[in-house]
Image (tube, rainbow, N blue to C red; front, side):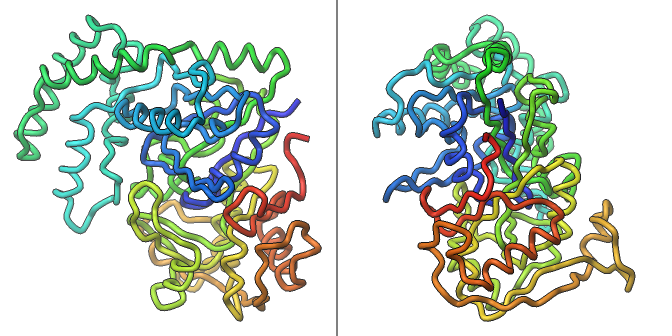
Length: 430
């Protein structure tokens, strides 16, 4: 038996969707455990591109149970739109294959309006949020004034909580942010319509999941964003609002850490990030633009161009440590085929001194200088390689060097966007 957690090992957008899609073949339950529709997983199935924001990637496989856990914050409108689109394409034939935790929190209109207005008010100190209301919803969750799915489907409870919470939210909108207030009547009517649709998916998912694991079924836990965006362990305050690291899989789904067997970190063969915050290996000239264009580095959720840089071994070593990674899936190796030489960051210096790990201080992080090692490129198109031995010798050397610097085994190498463009070196479910 194997239960596997997949996490982003960098700043998100590492290609988790494709890896989860591949591993889904070996799992019975696929569980999304944190984040909201600020995430976007792009999958290429045959010649079709599918982008999912909330629903686990396993929905593209028949006979799998997909669970959205209690650690997720759910925008009902986005979820229903995603469900409708998947049904129209014939991908969901039975509603019982998808379950929503009764305990997950609901994103409300005031969350989105506060999110957008705060960013506008922040000027040059913007965090770089997607404006989807994710952060404000998590704030209310931690502040014990959130609305959970179980509240939404009970009209009396929803009415009472909405009236109570709108007093504070409208005060913030009007008095602090200079925005018009939200209408109780409009929100109540809109969200009762959503409740009628969502009711069929609601379940005690933690109980169901644990019963499945006790019976010998296998689970794949799917995270959003990446390690360096974790609210506790990331480049705070330029982070997301949830626990993106492997520990979040347990708190966000209701299973014990003792039930987790493998933790796979997803890493690009270079690095990208979206939004503000420190990024020591960022390439601001034509090399960075070349990476962006070849790699198609534009956000699946927002369309924003991603900042691009060379592979950062300091980030990966940190990710190996805080997540307890047992393997790394390396994505987008094919993007580097167009470079004669490739740089790899092996460490940082600050004020001339080498650092042992990533600094906790944002001010220090922003002033870190990367130490580079230069490796030869391979030049050949590698998208047709299906075994490690079919890769050019220099590409093999590059992968082995990253493995050495990371201190963790590379278990998969992706050489293109399609499912079949993957070289599996070790299957964590085996």
